[in-house]
Length: 92
Image (cartoon, rainbow, N blue to C red):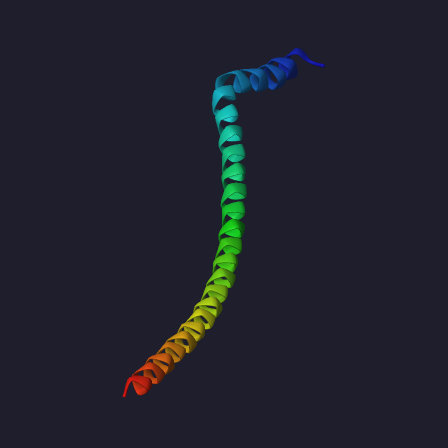
């Protein structure tokens, strides 16, 4: 190879890398950080969707249980009212 090509090609590339290596590493680090950040945000979104689904199932179950408990309470109150009426009727 002619000496001019070596000096202008390889030497200038080496100089360029030497001058810009810190910026290149920083750029590579930023790209890796951005990829990790995107992965985290995607995982967090999936976790939030799962949490919302779980909370909706729990809410539906709580509503069903509340309705059942309300019905039981109403039945108990009706029975107590009936017993009180019977007791009052006996005393008269």
